[in-house]
Image 1 (cartoon, rainbow over the protein chains, first blue to last red):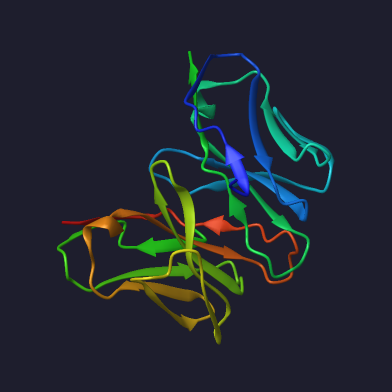
Image 2: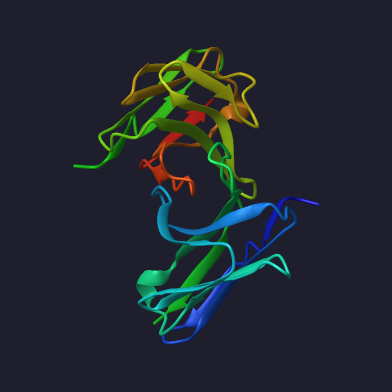
Length: 112
Length: 114
């Protein structure tokens, strides 16, 4: 089993829809959870990160962590065509030396 | 100006050639990373450096070498390029003081080995 699993999609939704993107993981030591957005032919950019469990909201984006289920989600409300990109989850354990473990990314397309 | 820059942005080369990809950053971060990205395989860590005197192998270091010339510069070399090294290469940086290790990526170098 891979440490981090992410459905590659592609996921296609109409403009205005609520989008749910998810990752599962197997390492219970993970404490930091991040979401990156990558536009075509660009480098990944950090969207949000959360520590341990709970929710974090930033505008139209909400990140959710359920450590008991080893499951994280990113919700996008009122999705826009400009949200069309690949979304990668990433996570690491609590120590300062650990590197990020990335999911393979989910490709999202928001149709006008 | 971009905080993390990579040169070249695109490169086509032939099998057996030596190639160097360069990364510079103005973020003042101590940690630097090299990744490659392939369709269906995601981001894979090649090498990372926590400071100028510290170099570590990542998941897929075979066929690659790196040099940390200064805090702000980290280069990746392919000593003898082969076609399966065709990929998108990213440099990233992170702050030594951050436990979350949030990484900030450059724009990428698209490398094609014929």
